[in-house]
Image (tube, rainbow, N blue to C red; front, top):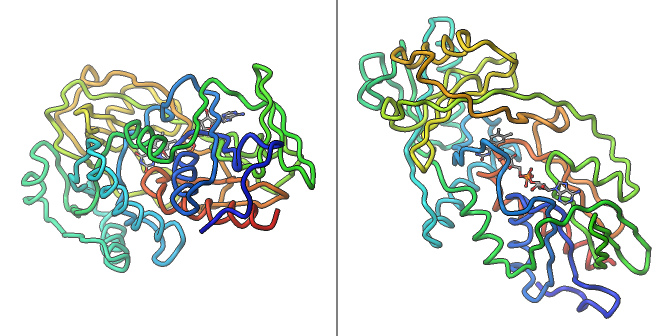
Amino acid sequence: MRVAAAPTRRHDCDVLVIGGGTIGMSTAYALTRTAPGTRVTVLDQQKRPAPAPPTTGVIHSGIHHRPGSPLARYTILGATELIKFCTEYDIPHAVTGKLIVATDRAELPRLHALVQRGRENGIPVRELGAAQIPDHEPAVRGIAAIHVGTTGVCDVVGVTRQLADASGAEIRYGAQVVHIDRRPALGVTVHTADGTVLRARALVNCAGPHGAEVARMAGDTPAVRTVSSRGEYYTLNRPDLLRGLVHPVPDPTSPLPGVHLTRGIDGTVHVGPHATRADLSSFTEAVRRLLPDVRAADLTPAGTARLRDGTPTDDFLLHEAPHTVHVLNVPSPATTASLPMGRAVAWRVLGVLGSG
Ligand SMILES: Cc1cc2nc3c(=O)[nH]c(=O)nc-3n(C[C@H](O)[C@H](O)[C@H](O)COP(=O)(O)OP(=O)(O)OC[C@H]3O[C@@H](n4cnc5c(N)ncnc54)[C@H](O)[C@@H]3O)c2cc1C
């Protein structure tokens, strides 16, 4: 695909992307792959590439998502593409598989429903009895489990850097966008906190949790209601207790995955999140349901993370305005889904460029 016209002297680039997270970088990458020659600049207020901590770099299977939903499609396709991308560019990654473990009989119907959902999503799922759990995770206990074959982990910062390099985009860190002007015939003018002014033919807002705020800066008022929640994470001081990823059976009344254990690509084991501020003993209790050997002294606080900050919808939300595409809701697992999501955003932006 060709971009309709080259940037004129009035424009510093064709497309300005606000936000250099995985979605912003995937969009830049998809733009220059789909329409070679497109001049893309990415602005990020952070000083260097870094995912919101403690993103653990899990390549999710998509087992939980409604079969046929956009999020299921993006995640399942995204997982395959992300593994291919990591292999192609030699980025550390591993397909470890994941156990979802029932520790109470009341969870068994939900575990069986997940097996069904996984199969409908075309994901390799194996049912395990209590005696088979230690074959996969010797220190984990439960009354039944399922093994999901396609889950893995990767170096998220490495992925983000490589997307940036391979896109050929100009990346400016330490560039906080504070003001946006739009003129019908001229395109978009963006002002950063240090007084820099950049003009582009089109703007993409990939500011993650700040998406609605950036949309308002552009004078748009998308009808999104923001819901927020935060959660506490810990690291496990005895990482040898875990081989891969272990999750509880999700609680259907909570949008969050519950306290789970993730061995990252660097060997660190992250534990969490606990959705509300909890004392260490109740957190330890939640971990011990899966991993009975853990004591409070084995856990070190790893910080608090923004778990959810977006609309209460579970799907990707794009909003188009003149010369602009806003990415307003990026549901988890957006890192996994980032390559196809970035393509979807890029197509919308190229449509905006073509009509501008
Ligand atoms: C705790 C946690 C753990 C997660 N773990 C995983 C996981 O293991 N695997 C997975 O697939 N998904 C995971 N996710 C989901 C996924 O990582 C995030 O949804 C994804 O990082 C979102 O990417 P993004 O590019 O939309 O947003 P972000 O990564 O938040 O990037 C937005 C960027 O915009 C920049 N920005 C904002 N405002 C401005 C401004 N005014 N000017 C300039 N720059 C601005 C910010 O600095 C930021 O870098 C996790 C999410 C959370 C919350």
